[in-house]
Image (cartoon, rainbow, N blue to C red; front, side, top):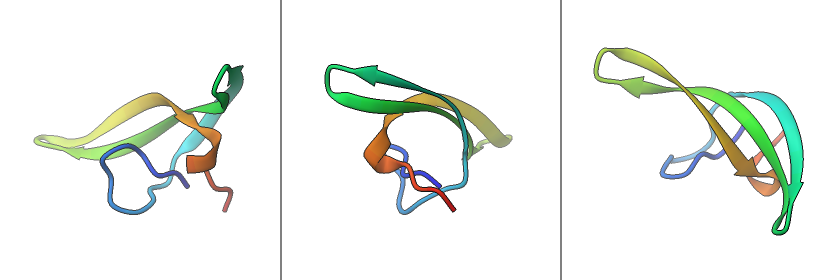
Length: 54
């Protein structure tokens, strides 16, 4: 589960990889968001604090 920027609450996602940056650990995740013609797949680097295992 993750909390993407601009989202209300958490959404399911897939953790693809980790990296360490100057600001701390980040996870590259893939998740779907609603789009005008159906779900859209998003891939983004998010701070580790916004990720949660379930």
